[in-house]
Length: 310
Image 1 (spheres, rainbow, N blue to C red):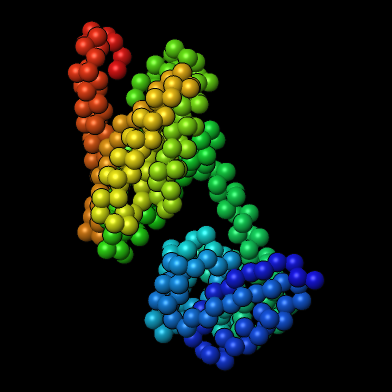
Image 2: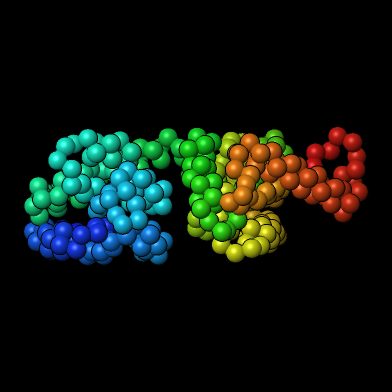
């Protein structure tokens, strides 16, 4: 009886070993495996951009990469997929180092059969899933489901490293809700929480895939990612303004949901220091908030009165 179906990326430069491993996968008595074979690292990294895999069987010594650098580059490119290292070494040292770097397991070539391979794959997938769950519990904001500050500090280096290796431009965008204190003071903290959750969902909907979405705390939010085309973030912010404006015209919740935003960009030439990016994004946020505050005053002279919150 077949339990589950798994898609495997096999990265191995020796054709005979690749064929033997593929045949082992076909012999599994309980699971069905579909495999894709690549013999170079660059080919493997390319297919990981377009196809999803359940597990990677990785030889460390390839024509274009060697030893643990191979593992490091695959983990950086696809951290969500568990990796089992295939090693030709007779000792455990290289395998143990691979596990310490993030591989789920290692198998010595010529020393395992189809049953051992099947078991290693199933256990690797489950361990990886449990590890991701534990990490997420520590880095997820309980109220909104976005990453928290710890999650941001953990994951933002990955975005910066990806930009360094890319021709595309990275961005760091700061948000905070306009007049959020007024919602809490006049309508209560339950309504304030409702506003935070709704804005988090708005960020998910307009940014969609790829960016790192974060709630720093209070009404402060962050989006960090890579533009797939020039002007993408500007267009996303424009769409967000439209979405919130349409939402506010309905008036169903008893409060308006508005946000100021400040964005800064970086590319492979820099800046790559988070503190520099943070200062620039924060300055842009302050400038945007002031211009929005002034625009509200210009359209509503009553807000010119000293002491009125805007």
